[in-house]
Image 1 (cartoon, rainbow, N blue to C red):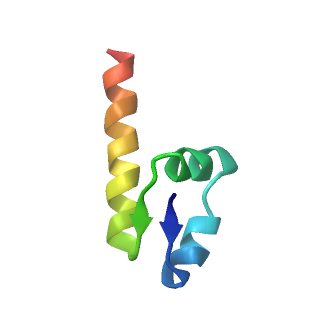
Image 2: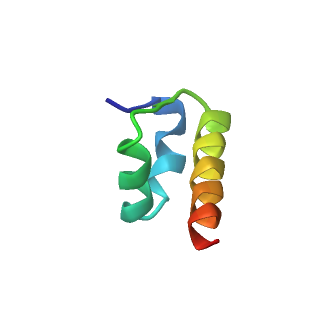
Length: 52
């Protein structure tokens, strides 16, 4: 089950519902903004791979 720390909850909530759901489906632990950025980076990379 994914976890979003209270410290970054505000930033997380600014994302689209689709993107939030994609992140939460990954069972990740987001303790700080760097964790969030890393997950977003992974999503972008995977999306680029699918387009090839």
